[in-house]
Amino acid sequence: MASKDVEMKEEGKDGAKPEGEVPKVKQDDDPDAEGEYMRISQLRFRLTSPKAKEEKKAKDWADLLAIVEKFNSVAVYEVTCKELGKPVDSALLAKMKEQNAKRMAEIEAAITDAKENEGETEVRDGLLAKAQLLARTGSKEEAEAAYDEAEKLPKTTSGQKLDVQFHLMRIGMFWGDIPQVEKHVKAAQVLIDQGGDWERRNRLKVYEATYLLSIRDFKKAAGLLLDSISTFTATEIYSYSQFVMYTVVCATVALDRKTIRDKVINAPEILAVISDEPALEKLMNSLYACQYKDLFTALVDVVDDLHLDRYLASHARYFLRQTRIVAYTQFLESYHTVSMENMAKTFGIGVGFLDRELSDLVASGRLSCKIDKVKGVVCSNRPDSKNMLYQTTIKQGDLLLNRIQKLSRVITI
Image (tube, rainbow, N blue to C red):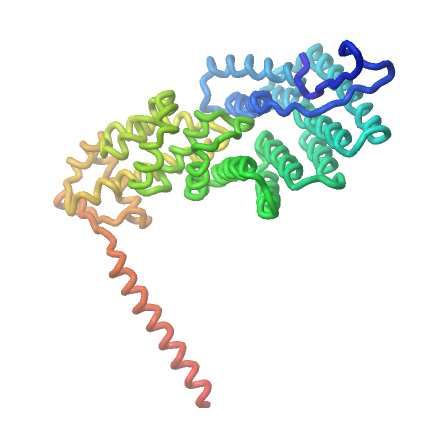
């Protein structure tokens, strides 16, 4: 089963190919096909995750095999079998390698013919088709080298160079190579500044936000994701529903309550798909509505899902802790003093658990409150920004005066 890596362009009467003519080739520009291929990396991650259930792993393995066979993805098939300790199907492997060799021979012939008889456009199309074939079937290094060769062709426009950077970013995302993604995000930003259309600018926001997710810069990622809600077209890396999930997760821990209401809860684009994720919808609405017991219930389910997401799995515990901090802070803003028992009841947790968690958060400076163990109450200690600024100014002023005095002594001497 071959993908659309090679598009045959035939000329001649009655659609017949003239004798001796080498077929031209082009890369597959279908974002849905690329999105299906990129899904392999998510399936591979879940298959290797100890958090995934065995019955779901069986389905994921079947789905992965179907996609691998469709795109003849030899390299990722061999790597996944090794990671899972599964035997390699030698017949399937031989079949995929044979089809890949056949397609590569066609592409190489088309590139040679284009260099001898055609123009730069046909040569570039052939090199990009070769690079895409290697990206889907070969190793990461081979694909990178092929895309670099295509980008270095003379008369390559900034838009074409940006498309190559998007390809290279996806290769990094597919193999979990964060430094590579960072490298090509920065390269794409330079190209965008030199001149890029709005469609590519908007796509770059999604790619950069995805990179920021992987390094836990949720605040900046939230801004980029929210900017892309109505212009999202990057279905080649993940679906719109997954994009909305990332947006809500980032906004929950990085944005203030008013911004979440205006740009997330009331956003029609999010409302159109959020119902497909009931736990996420419940978390989003219950936090804003101050229904903390429902929030903590939904939080458990959302974190379970994050453990199975390849971009957010390593940040699932951080999200769990940070969301609880946001909820505690929001709750305590409404009280000067509240009993531990009432607060624990509101959140649907035990008094002992609440006591331990608040003590830890207060000691680490994450919550502005005091715990009175004798009376069994929590005293809210709202930070006064003006007073804090005044105290900071006094300290800095004293420091400056001390330095001036020391300097005056040196000058006098």
